[in-house]
Image 1 (cartoon, helix red, strand yellow):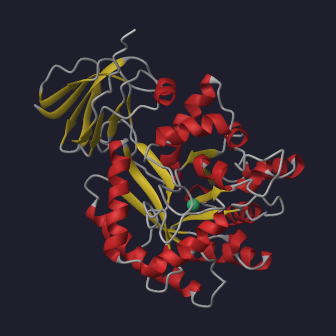
Image 2 (image 1 turned 90 degrees about the horizontal axis):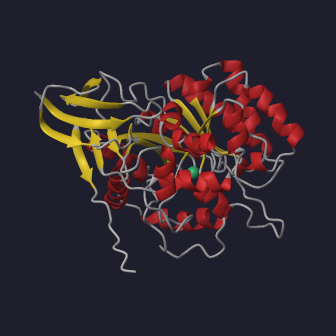
Amino acid sequence: MYDLILRNCRLYPETKLVDIAIQAGKIAVVQAAITESAGREIDCDGQLVTPPFVESHIHLDSVLAAGKPHFNISGTLFEGIQIWGERKKSLTREDVQQRALAALKLMAGNGVLYVRTHVDVTEPNLIALDALLELRDQVKDWMTLQVVAFPQDGIYSRPENDSLLEEALKRGADAVGGIPHYELTREDGVRSIHRIFDLAEQYDRLIDVHCDEVDDDQSRFVEVIIAEAIKRGGGGRVSASHTTAFGSYNDAYAYKLMGFLKRTNINFIANPLINITLQGRMDTYPKRRGLTRIKELWQNGVNVSLGQDDIHDPWYIFGTGSMIGVAHMAVHAAQMTGLKEIDACFDMVTSHAARSLNISDYGIKVGNPANLAVLGVVDPFNAIRYQVTPRYVISQGKVIAETQPTQTNITV
Ligand code: FE2
């Protein structure tokens, strides 16, 4: 007698139907036609059962804060930073936790059970950091949260920011962040990356740097990250987020970097909803898409994942918590409409994102945590085509969200 059995599950990329038995929060059996019974059984009716979606890049400290103190009129990254600079002066722990928890629940309903959040650690009291570290513990029974210490205003733009970043690691942040293209000089940007790698080594943390999030084709800090990862090793623990300038580099330079990337295994994290919205704002026409080279990086064997970045905040007014919605935008904006490319975009919000986050027990395998989403479609293509919400979301063996399919009655 198991706790839960999912019957007639279609796994991806395999196509044979299996049953999945769950016991004590773990996947106990995966095989065709399990004969035992369970306290609860769900017939998945041949539809896709996937490991959960993984949000590899979001800012939970600013979610659901759009319009306060005012909306972003120019639509630019820099106006967003300026509005957030005003808003963060009035942060409280309760304010951050309430909004972040609401966003995590939105995400859980959409089958997201792993989340990497950046948190601004240039606010002198580290209120948002403490709030999210506490929340990480509060939600751990149904959501795995990673916290990146993110120096939003730069490590060297103010004297205290360097020590605030280090203090964030001492308090328990999972990863070191950075923003080299927003440091005051190119030299400060390079120095900031060396500092990030030093801190990661000293405190044994992951690295995830906001890197080259600008349309400037001379913003070339990703080469510094690649170089450090080659020289120091451990590239799998390093992520370069956004890298939108990579979409503006000339091909000769871009393909030189692609060559260097074969010598390390760093991860790239793109945020297509946000990148296509924030970037290209200063162009006339032709207007750039402002995305990193998602397709070409993937074709070159680089691990690429996708994030939402923002949900209804000073940088982006929309956002639903759906990673399928993010994959849908990637398919369009990166022109990945071939069937294998569409599957790759699905991978970028599931298994590839799990790799970016260094999650070792991810996937539908015996012994892994029973984290699953039952989708009401047969394959990733249809999941993205119809932008489905999961029918069931199972976290550590418990059904934590159920969504009834919508039904439209056509009367003609
Ligand atoms: Fe970001």
